[in-house]
Image 1 (cartoon, rainbow, N blue to C red):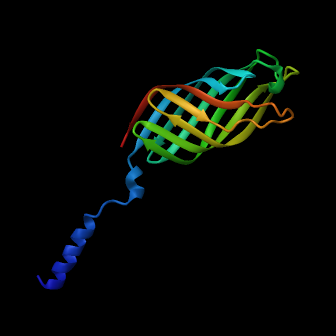
Image 2: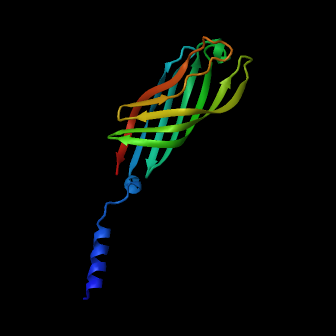
Image 3: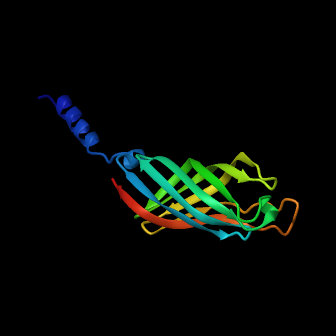
Length: 174
């Protein structure tokens, strides 16, 4: 072999042993979990009756869904008869995420659909987006951190609709 061929082969061998780029570090990662939504952290006008959530993260693509029932405890600000049950469905558009050990944290926009019990006895479907929202999941717990509700017509209104729950099943790796 001549010198040029040996040099080219040596360069190719060196290049093939360089570390893989960080963007491929997420390839093969997975995080699949589900659990319960048990309560609001700081809300007085309603309580979570029961709920569930699930998350599936495969190679950086995260799918989240949640569902829960809310019991109305106050006519105002809920605009619902006391004791009635509203239903909530949640999905998520993920902006970014981190995995630190066995904890998955992701943030972005929460999409909400609500079946609302109105004061006049009828029901109505409402939809809205909440941003920024952060969800943190570990082998034991679930925490959804959302911004507090605005004051609306009453400047003393200060409920924060964060939610907490448990993790009942989890698998992760990669």
